[in-house]
Image 1 (cartoon, rainbow, N blue to C red):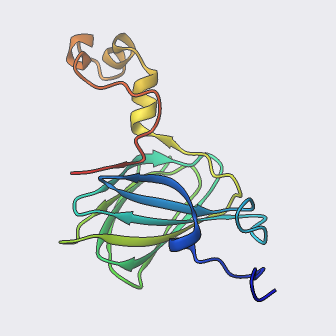
Image 2 (tube, rainbow, N blue to C red):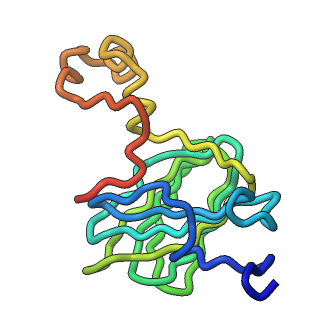
Image 3 (tube, rainbow, N blue to C red):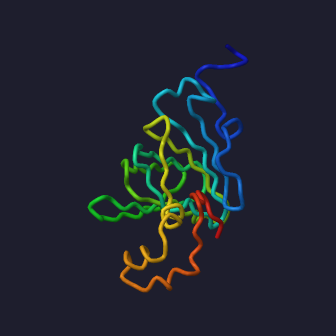
Length: 166
């Protein structure tokens, strides 16, 4: 038990890597690397200066963000189109209900770190870049009531960027 504790995992050091790039790092713990987590998932997120956790939503999970280091801004858009933007510092938490569109922006002069808990063992993630990448320019033009040519230079990634650098 002492060499392999059931109830402890050093998330920052031992979590599985989801992202590691210029914008930051995301590591996670789930039932696969921390078997005691049967009904939830935990993320460690480090955002570099100016880093952005791209706008996204989780269709199947609510999210609780705890700021460990730095300062972040979280913007939340609900299903009834109400909007809230909050700035958080170490010790602050923010709750995001399932399905709410949101982002996390690092406001600190250096890096910011968060511990993030999800209410589902396999949180689904639909990011803005993946959603826009799914749509052709004609659909985007119709959606924004403008010419499809407006979107000709918009990158269309196959998936989510997750974290972007400034």
